Image (cartoon, rainbow, N blue to C red; front, side, top):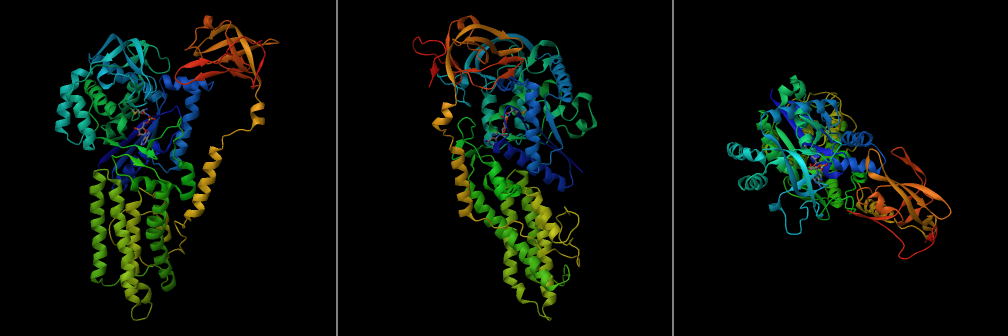
Length: 624
Ligand code: MSP
């Protein structure tokens, strides 16, 4: 038995997971399940990346400590994975003690390699990416290539990892292991980067507080990527050199989307080389899931209604669609109408009807699964096709061609449907042909069992339903022809994919979209807001909250204390005497132990600008 260790990226815990995260996790799940039924010992890791400035910032805007915020987010991920039937063996959180111990051990090893040094650093920094961009990767506008936002010029004293030193060894590794990065387009991209030269990279942040302190200088916090990448070993118990770690490392597959391959295929292997540890066998990158050709974006309202589609079509249809529709490695546009078509054509028609029809005939004519007699040529053809389907499937799985793998299985499903047609099995219920009918129906049931094994990594629930309906009490995972016992009772057969009417479904979807879009509020609603002009009389920082200020605001007839998230944009003394607009009838809240009785208005995008009346007006004047 061989071992197989597959990982997904650990997703940032600063927002809820979406269909893009689901895509990677389902792909990794398919691999894990496939290797399990092949008899391999599998470990499948996913998890959340909980440190870094972004998470700290989001937590603060919600009035939570970063830990409390992460404690709220992590279960949202695990619940989604349960819902999607993800069979991960490990769920790693970077705030766990296991991970922190592992990171301390790994960073100590890195430091002791002599390839870590301290130096001042300045450069173009993207906050959402939490990384510096080298000049040569940027245009004159200095815009983040991923987020399309202006970059900040940041100066810091940091620790650096001598990545440049590993260029030659990496090149050698790429040439010795042509499949190290898959697909080839990504490999070529990284080879270009490698050939143009690597720069040393900073591994710490002195300006960030939410993270793991460097074991050799606790004043500095590990850069979020340096904290994140080793999760693949810390999750296995690298800290204690555990049995699991020794069994499963190096990983077989690190699965991810294309945008984070550089971290995984350049920095991570170089760090492992420095720490004298084996490298993962393969970095596998798929494309992006898009909606109407655009990148998914919460702020721009571009999202995939994963919950709605799962509710309508079920988890397996959603998993099937994602794996069947997109060619791995390329971007793919998510279209609910295609999901609908695939549901009706592939699942309900081809597979669901076949099962139903065969069970109907068995129930009507036999007391259980009939015994087969001497096969005809056409029967042998089916048996042979089962075997070749399995072989082709293995080839596709080796290159992550999930779409072709499913197409191959469905060619067989359609062949079995044709077998039913060609043999006109329903006409054979006469005494002289009943043995022939039994043979054909046995073959159909065995083909369905065989198919259920092959599809089980993709649609595990469906696979189980099929085996239950054909009478097996325990799931049989072996794709070998002839294992189906005879005489056992088959069930009546509920449709596994009841047909869904597109017209009705579209109407339902449209209604839902309309409801979601009707974010218009009535004038009466607007009037409920009590907005007043005020003047700031005092402003002071709040201990332990870098982005918050405690303000006293004079509203003419009364004074109010308000907590505002503007400390990064306004120095307290500049604010004194400033006119602001206050929402005075907002529910009071306690933020970082400070009471806040209202909210001041600001135009807020990347920067934050307070809204002020254009000319002098008395304090307390209402804003309408
Ligand atoms: N925390 C880092 C990863 C650290 S791994 C050591 C991170 N997190 S993330 O939340 O931004 O997740 C990025 C990953 O989510 C992608 O690489 C991909 O696996 C998945 N996807 C996010 N959006 C996606 C699409 N639109 N389409 C497909 N996959 C997507 O980066």
